[in-house]
Image 1 (cartoon, rainbow, N blue to C red):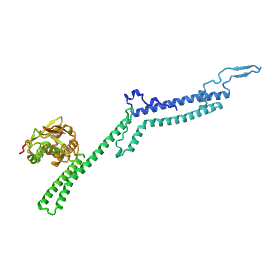
Image 2: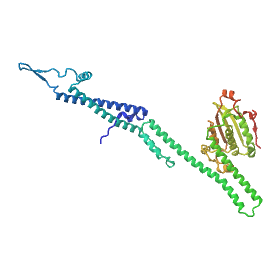
Image 3: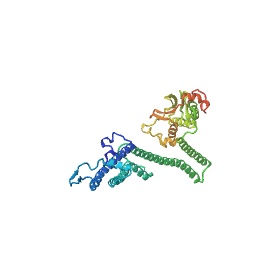
Image 4: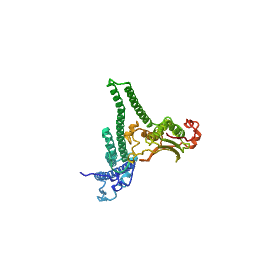
Length: 440
């Protein structure tokens, strides 16, 4: 079977990779070319049909044959003049304007009308089929996207369109659809891991509570000391559950838009955080040092920002060596407030540095469990920093320690000068001295 193709509807293969024609322009060019071809075909058809029809009518009327005139004396004279003194179209127009047509002219006009109607019907039919084919060709990739969307479910998120062809709007839509499926798949996978980790973290303290209860209740000789040990174990398990639930709620809050926005001065905020963590530092024999912190003012949620630096400094204390040090430093660079938390602790292996901000990830599971951690601290830090349009970076070397750098957008100086007194701020809570906290 012969297949017809229209080269004006697609680019040559040689140029498909080099040129980019928007879909709208391609459809416009194709439609214009289709209208031109059909119009030319209509004119050609009418002219050919009119020539044949006029010849037949003129021949049947005898206008195309020479006429003879018989004189009174019997002489026959042959008339060789043109049978029609004016062009046929002009005669028809003049007769139509006068309002009367002779039978031959009326037959010619009727023939023209019939031919025009037939040609118009053919052009309309061909144009309809051509437009339908053109639209189907242009929208075929959209049908692929639609069919793929109908097949999508949780079990088939690995489906991809993998659409080929020129990079036009349809190709971009298909690529965006594939990227969306990839993100959905990753989101569902993360959700599954998150639920599994939450269930595991909840199961551990609950199992400890059940075990301590069973030990005491199954022993009829249990003493008051046994019950006190059970109560202490229950309290530790409940504290761990409370911490886990609190961290999960904070993680959910960090993924929502900021509501309590105010000016926050980082100097007094860090002083307060260090004062709160001073007992923990003394317990681990770690020195806390706050140095070189200019007047850095940012816009954000004060409680969430306090949680960021509290988690970082607490990790630096817990994973430090006895007699170690935690230094908190701040500076202004490129319109951002950069706060670094450096420790002299155990460090993080290079292969695990890219995973420490994942939820429930632990570099050292046994040590994290011993300290009561669930692997949510750094993921909360990263989520809050991102919520404040900042970013966090890490440098670490095993055996030498780690440095976390938090960068947050600074309040513009003119806004800080004019609105500092009007907006609530954390600047008035403490003095401007840079204290040094030393462990035992």
